Every structure is written in structure tokens, then in C-alpha cells.
View (cartoon, rainbow, N blue to C red):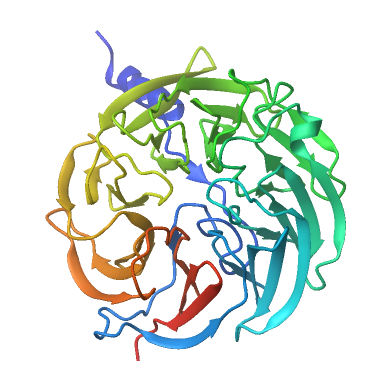
Amino acid sequence: MISAGGLALAVFALAAVQGEGRLVASKEPGWPQWRGPRRDGKSDEKGFLRAWPPAGPRLLWKAEGLGRGWSSSVVSGGSIYLTGDVGADLVVFALDLDGKPKWTAKNGAAWTREYPGARSSCVVDEGAVYHLNSHGRAVRLDAETGKEAWAVDILKRFEGEVILWGLSECLLVDGPRLIVTPGGKKAAMAALDKKTGDTVWASEPVEPAKAGYGSPILFELNGRRHLVNASAKHVFGVDAETGRGLWKRPRPSEYIALCFTPVLCGDGVFVTTPGKNGGTLYRLGLKEAEPRVEAAWDTPLDTLQGGVVLVDGLLYGSGYRGFSGWGAVEASTGKVLHSERNFASGAVTYADGRLYCLSERGEMALLKPAPEAFESEGRFALVAGRVEDAWAHPVICDGRLYLRYHDALFCYDIRAR
């Protein structure tokens, strides 16, 4: 029989092994990287409109001439950074907070194959802007001038290859290191010295040696700092300090595209695969001090590139082919609590008790999340006419909502009066 004290120690030991994870946030102000400060698609700002008028919130300005692409804005230090393909070039744009141009810089060639346009968003850190183009060219630019400090072909260095629809990873800065996922024969993931571009560590390859289309997250769990991302056919985790491969799990898809950004859920990560395999929560624990991974549950939610947010124990996102419309999934069980089919699939961002949802057809919606149903608090058409490729994610920073559709960036005031 276990004594009360022994039981308490056992419970303590289990809690130490199965702890709650914590996302590592950027130290930069604003919305300095893909999906926000923690890469979870959530803003901590408050004081926003609870509902929108029929025409939507007040439009402050519209900037045009930004090229073709789906990269989302990053906003930090009084500047907005985003990318677009202009002619034969991938162009990084820096705008001021009124949407006026500050500088432009080229980062190699445009993507002119299937679905032409810029993919990856920038990341801002300590006076520098980092970006990866579709062909594998990673660059460091001065945030004030756009001057190039260094550039590295990560596919050449780590023996990767250009994938079918072009590299789409949004780079991550971890202290002195820049994290890249070339999916190559010499590294599935690698850390570069952010000041020089030199290789700090390279993780073991994940076969087949091809990159996915997703972007990594960084979090602390069980005394270790983890990086999790996807290759062409697997989700995998590495030790952020050393690059040591910790685990991998296959994610087969009939659509050959792993585009998810993982979502940290307690002691696990939620990932999605477009098609019949849907989403899975993988719990991450320890066994004899070594990482242990197990699938906790599956769900039909098969988000492609629109992202999923975790709010009050529920996962919110839209489906692709295996799940129609938008759904609310219980994070503890994977059960779909309710769904909304009167709104096309798209991208989601969360702030101040509301979901900001941009459908791929160019309609913007403000939804109130709840376990029972979505409540619409306003909708408006961002794009005139019929489109099916409004794929950039909504960005929220300093009371403003930034929405991008190819050549144009729209800035709305969403603060309550």
C-alpha cells in the first residue's frame, strides 16, 4: 500500500514528467513574426469592437503595389514588413504605420511555377529582418534600411530540393540562432548564427529528405526546449539547444502538402493533415529521461494553411476537404462540439474574445467563440468579385487589423470608441 506521503511524491513526480508546455515568445514588440509573438495566432490586446457595422470596421488606409503573394504582415518598431513577387523578383517591402513606403529589398527570384507568388512572412529581431524565399534563399536585412547583411542558400548547404509549390516556411529566431527547415539530406532542421549565417547545428534528416510547407513553433516542456515542424511526410521534434532529433511521426496525405503550424496544447502538440487523416494531438512525455510520444486522439478537422487557435480549451479552425466549414474541437478529447458551414475555409486569428476569420473567398468575419455555436458579430467583403485565394492571415497590432490580398494591404481601426 502506498502511504499518503508516497502518493503525494508519486503525483509530484508524474506532474514533473507530464508538465504543461510554455511557448517561447519573441522579445520584440508588436506582431514581429508569423502568427504573432508566440506563433499561436493570438493577440493579448484588449478594448476592441464587440461587433462590426454592416460595412465592417473603419478603413484607415490601403497600400497598393505590393506584388503578388500570400505572406502576412509583421509589425514591429514602427514598421510593417511583408513580401510580394514583382516581375522576376521576390521583394521585401517596409512600410510606415500610415502605409507609406520606407524601403524595398530583393531576396532572389520570384516563384513563377504553379501558384505564382510570395509565400513566407518575415521575422523581425534586434534591428534585423529575416526572410526565406521559395527557392531556399535565407537573408538578413537591416530593419531600418533594407541593406543585406548576408544570404544563405539553405537547400544547397543542407542538400535539400525545391519542393512542388515552393518553400513556404516562416523563419523563427531563437536567441542568437535563426531556425530553418530545409528538409535536406544533411539536415531536416538547422540553426544558423543570426549575425553571420554560419551553421550552429544541423538535425538528422527525416526520410524522404524533403521539406514541408509549415513553420515551426518553439516551446519549453519537461525541462527541455522543443522545436516542432513538418517535413514532406512527417511531423517531428528536435532539441532546440543541440538539434538532436527527439521524435517523428508519419502524416500521410493524399494532397501531398503538410502546411500546418503546430499548436501547443498542454503537454502536447496538435497538428493537421489535409484530407482523410484530419488532425491529431500528440502528447509529449518522458520515459527513463528520454522523450516519449503518443497519439492521444484524432479529429476530422483537416486545416490546410489557415491555422488553428486554442482558446479556453477549444481548438478553432476551418477544414479543407475532409471537414466542411469551421469547427470547434474539444482539446481534451478531439470531439467536434459544433461546426459552421455558412462560411468558406480560411485563416483565423484571435483577440479580445473574438475570432477574426478571413475566408479564402475574400470575406472577413468577426465571430464570438463558444462551446455551443459560433455567433456572428459582423461580416464584410474584403475583395470584390469571386476569388478563392485570399490566404494571408489576419494580423492584429496596436488596435489595428491588417488584411492582405496580393497587391494590396488594408488597415482597419478595430478599437472600441
